Length: 146
Image 1 (cartoon, rainbow, N blue to C red):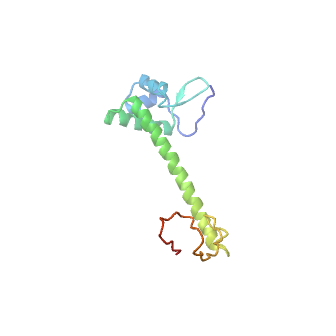
Image 2 (cartoon, rainbow, N blue to C red):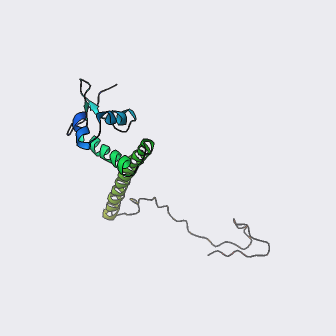
Image 3 (cartoon, rainbow, N blue to C red):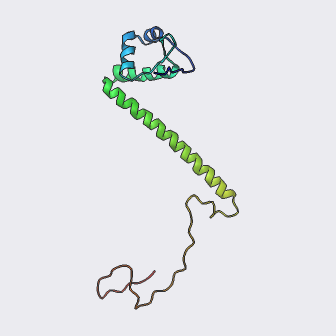
């Protein structure tokens, strides 16, 4: 298993346990359950980053304040992660649309830079009365082109 080397603040398990008033065994259990993933030193010491601390804060809020069990915590954390990813994608999409609209506004020919391709319209021709309509009509009715 490759060692994870995270940057930013790093805290040992004893510091984190004391700060959050939990037993170190609780933190180990959260790791076994996949809720926390602290990095490890070459000597196999767990190091918790600021992101791990924020995640632990959410876990403890869910379990202590709201009474959510660990399976529920896992589901909630996964949903939050997916929502964050969707928000990031939405921001990227809005940025793309805005930049595309700026390009279209600056262009001499806005149709060639349209977000949605514009097809040339075919001139409409009048339909002859003896011509069949592509739409089935009840017998005796007359189809009128608009």
